[in-house]
Image 1 (tube, protein in one colour):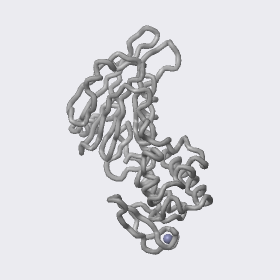
Image 2 (tube, protein in one colour):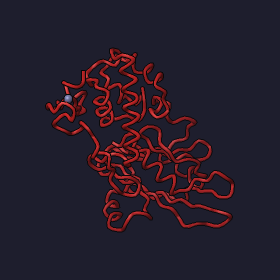
Image 3 (cartoon, helix red, strand yellow):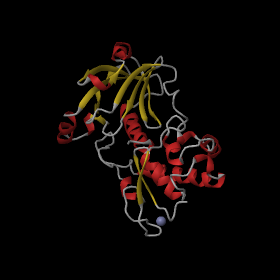
Image 4 (cartoon, helix red, strand yellow):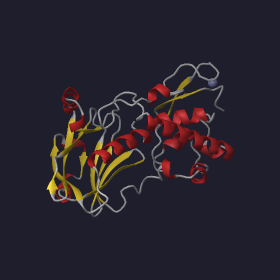
Length: 282
Ligand SMILES: [Zn+2]
């Protein structure tokens, strides 16, 4: 958590708010950074080089949210379990006071439009458990070690990547070096929808089953984005609101199969909790 739908939701909200220019009449730059907890911030020395640089893009690569600045400077956010990127101005005071207890770093953006300075825009990054990461980096491609994001993959590429892998399909789907963006929840829901056991080796799955799995994942991710993602424990969007897609999970954290009514099995595959129906998923 968060996975692709949650990262997409947050990145979209930030992008709308920061109003990234697509003409030369306005520019938005990072004016100031306030640091509250250094331990989960990497390459802090790059901050001076990023200050005052034009912000060109706010988006996500799989689960990772990023700010991209002019001349290949980036700030990457790994939200892990409890990370949140919050638009301070749009969240009510009580809520912001709560989140501020966990503040790690704050970004103050300055927007100039038609020669005028607009009001500062503040994005707050908070984390409770400190498995999260903020990475400053100068690189022409900071995502080299990751596979292509699922949302950019055609079915044939999806099949080509996975059908060579000898480990269980659930682990292959979650392996970010193969395909970026799918984590525990959506792997579990996708495999249930496609009626594939999470324990089967990826290389043993038929082409037909892969097509089904691909379209299941597409549909599930799309529906989740519509619902601003799933909140299992701590996830909130950039407005500090819970997602809603957990209400539509079919099998994650459930005890009875919605299709056959038999008991759902809860097992661990490499330390990650997995739910599946042994009767419906073969
Ligand atoms: Zn079943």
